[in-house]
Image (cartoon, rainbow, N blue to C red; front, top):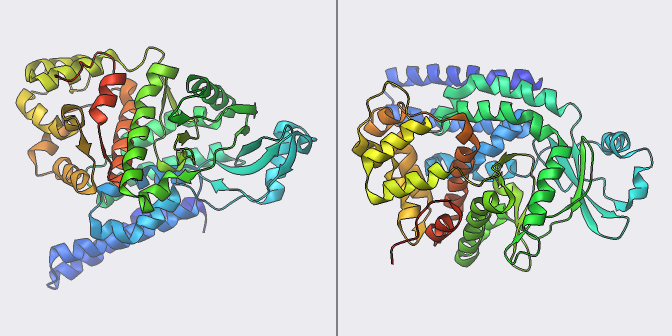
Length: 431
């Protein structure tokens, strides 16, 4: 069965299960029981198809895996392991195909660049896979090879998945897939350009050179579809999510936030792909960062409006917050929004900046997803009046994805201090 046919079959299968569910309700089965069974079967089919595909399907699967923490426990538990695998694994390319790509990108004598090259990939993800090798000077390196036809497959999958917004709504109420897909389409060209990624990664590597807490591997060579960088070992963040101690989870969460928030100030770039497959905990305790295909260029740091609006919200000036959000384009024109209701809507997401320490938990995230995702609630009604300006798309992606990862980590820590340190204009905490 072709990749397009498998993707197209997902909404059809969901519709069929919904029809069966209606029949079961008419014959006396409780609606909640039928809905739970519908969600379970939909999840099973969705994860199976996404796990078999690369391209856009794989990329969306990786993004969705971050939001696993927002799903009801009875739905998330059976598929948590499958979702975690989406963050790092995909079926590999044959060695002969890899060699052909390397020859076309690095020249017919590409093997002379390496003392050794391992044909079996160590990781495979949405648009490329990574091989371990030893560079000609003896350094261990990672060689990222882009899948042939990745661009065409990525666009095709995103077009197919764009028709499935309602299906994803069944999986995780409150998660609007359309902005994510729209953003992914806009960034396809950049993520497929390994030369551009090499420039971004080198900029990060220089900004964090000799840092005590963060390690970014530098670039040794690059071409359109091949990228050679320093090797990063250590423990995948996905393993910390699964098996980490309380201390390991908290430290990983703090360094994760520190890197994401400090990038615009230190490198003029925001790392915009926050899923756990891109991070490692090194043996010396540093936090290793991988994959710089998706970045937001912020040469002047975070937009000043972020710190200014946070200050207004934390000080209780609700009317000024509403006015500021209107000016930035976050409130749809013509909508009459109550300032107090707006702050009530935003309050849970202000708590990490309001409190000296904060605990990101699955229970907290599920509560917020239900609060804004249930169409019967006042919060959901208000949310439909809000807008996401294009200039904030990647910042929004990182914020939501970061919150999902922190809740998977069950991380606790002084996140307020990190925000106040790196967000321009955000006032220091009161003594």
